Length: 191
Image (cartoon, rainbow, N blue to C red):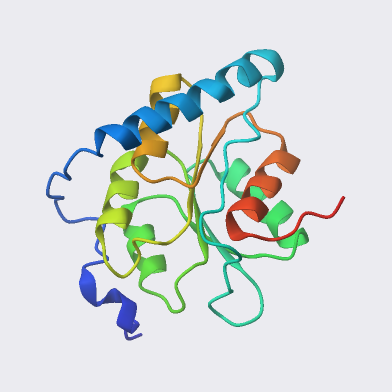
């Protein structure tokens, strides 16, 4: 299979990464403020459900009909559950558990419309994967939601300051995850 044209700018997540410059101080301050707003919600309910934003309006599906969600998660049971729920919500799903699988999926056309990214992977750090996505001109605007057990304010602030469009902590409400995906993609919510 020949990689698609979007793959020409090093979509290799296994090669050593050049250190990324730190995010600008104003972005870090804004991310910390946003992360702090979710902390009381986490303490009260055990879930972050409102850490998603849409920056550019509705995202058009790359395949022309249905949005494709790329789930990067190493927990098989959670991957199956999230995949099933998103499929029932009308999304196409793709999966990866490690760097090799991430490479394979990013180099299959078409690119996904959104990435759900775990932070703790067996051979990768999700924050570094996010940095690599944001540093690649072909995929830098790809929406990314961090989906992780790392729920400290510093972790949330780090993800948001690195450019995540949302941050959902485990355990999460499935409805909250679907709502975050819809928010980031600019899909109107059904009441």
